[in-house]
Length: 405
Image (cartoon, rainbow, N blue to C red; front, side, top):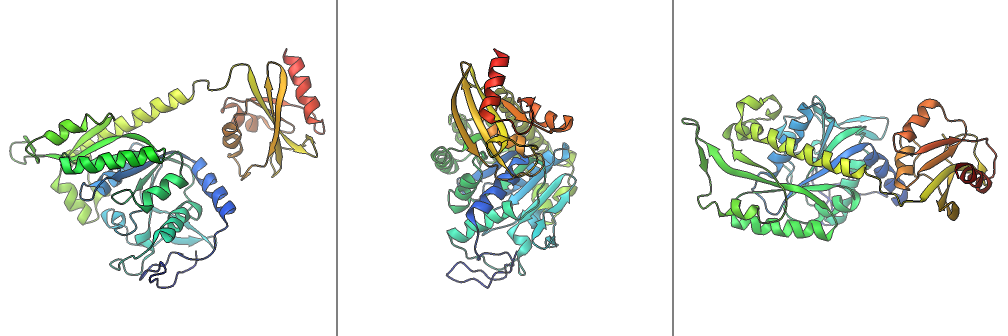
């Protein structure tokens, strides 16, 4: 990453070392983003309709709870004008530059990695004055130039409202799912309705709602005291037609730990907030596991198969481990009904099965595949068929069809 100039009305800002200008090759960047996202199992955008509801505290502690369960978790702070995640987690050192261009995210705790624009600022108290295009570029760079590796969860903390940052996330990560944070006030719930409409307009699935600061535990008697006397907000929350993942109490200990940058040191037993967040994490994981179970049900059209094969000059390639074109042959009722070609965006190890799965492939025809390589494709539900290199593809598929009839 190159250093940006001090930015003014053209999108510059004081004290930021992250590249905010320069030229980006759209196709290369899109391929890199897709490659990064293919290594991440679940992407969660934590958002709110308004500020002051504790959204960042929820995002950070949710990431911590998931990491403590043994999941590999990444946390991105895209609240570009108010980045507080680094301070809350006590991270003071900037990101390390490796391999000439790529940054490693900071290791905050076991299984938890973090990146924030705050880590790249010389002066963390400087105002960031960026317009939409620059924000868009920075968020994309978090996915193209940060080495995340394989993650179970990527938690994204966005600023309040429905502006440039959540819109960029929605457009850049099509499979991202939202968790909306609110408080039990009617004024907050009115903004939640706007956030829900935003998600629906950009086709973002909503995992559920989290009610924050609904009550506080009395330190003397242990009773739960509502912070909002009417309770109307909590009742209205259940009328929005979305799952409520949990209700979190106001916890002065969490506030103090966040201010002092020691959230990672706070034990669940010390905090009613973290105890409630454990229940939220459980509900979240259960909802995602249910989604995965449904997704594993057969989605392919009965009687239709899609054969894929790496090709060179229209014939089966001798290998399946280099940048080469693939032919896709659609077969319905024992007849070839369509044939197309495409080149994978990236041929890095482990990514080809995901790409072929997205193309709806049911059968992979290849030469020279090892047993371990075949297992990668079989885990995606594809039948692996071996054949001699150099065989014309159409004749090969025709023979396979006849052999299976």
